[in-house]
Amino acid sequence: MGALSGKTAIVTGAAGGIGRSIALALAGEGVNLCLLGRGRERLEGLFRQVATRHPGLRITFHTVDLADAAGVRRVCEDLLRDEPAIDLLIHSAGLMVPGGYSEAESADFDAQYFINVRAPFLLTRGLLSAIRAGKGQIVFVNSSAAQQKARAGMVAYAASKYALIALADSLRDEVNADGVRVVSIYPGRTATAMQERIHRLEGKPYRPAALLQPEDVAEAVLNALKASPTAEITDISIRPFQKG
Ligand SMILES: NC(=O)c1ccc[n+]([C@@H]2O[C@H](COP(=O)([O-])OP(=O)(O)OC[C@H]3O[C@@H](n4cnc5c(N)ncnc54)[C@H](OP(=O)(O)O)[C@@H]3O)[C@@H](O)[C@H]2O)c1
Image (cartoon, rainbow, N blue to C red; front, side, top):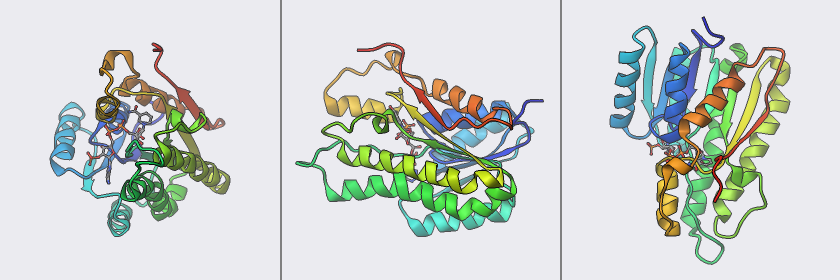
């Protein structure tokens, strides 16, 4: 039996890209899943896939728009009713809308702040009692954009991911003493719907095989979650091996 077997994970952005890969990888380790996303159909599809492959697991899904604070509060109440102790919370949902000072729309700035910053804060805060009870682990899917000098043309996204570093570091400082571990992962360009859209907007040909794969990111997350209980992996940088 693996280190994570029998644990329960809440995964945001579970229906797409990196979140979906993390959910599938966790299921492969025997982890029960609470899948969060906006689209009921895509969540149901993932639910069926996991339930067929891993009939012994307990799987639920919850539709929520993470930009809606009241919706996040409701989903926290639902989750706490079912899960008095939470082992793993994976924040993967995210939004990237390219744009510099000249063209970035205020509404896009707000949306990236709501989804990339406020939602992980509200969700973590809402579930913290159960995470403390489970001596849980929290993963923030950040971005290599927060590990380099912020580039022109992505002001709101870079600002939101810089803020996510502060969220993770401040949380770690607050909850380590309670046995809760916090890890940030900073992927470079990863072959998901988000990256396909960005290539289209940049007018570049999309060659997914040259990018990181969402499964690569999931594997790195899993390794961190399986670290010995005497260790804490705090930050993981991962980038495509092919450059160019
Ligand atoms: N792909 C990359 O190159 C890359 C690189 C570095 C970091 N990241 C980060 O990795 C994370 C996952 O991105 P991805 O590449 O997997 O992109 P993706 O395939 O577009 O997935 C993003 C997920 O976020 C969810 N989401 C977006 N807005 C939401 C909202 N308002 N409420 C609830 N869920 C919402 C989406 O759910 P729906 O299905 O409901 O739309 C989707 O499942 C993000 O935090 C992103 O910033 C990605």
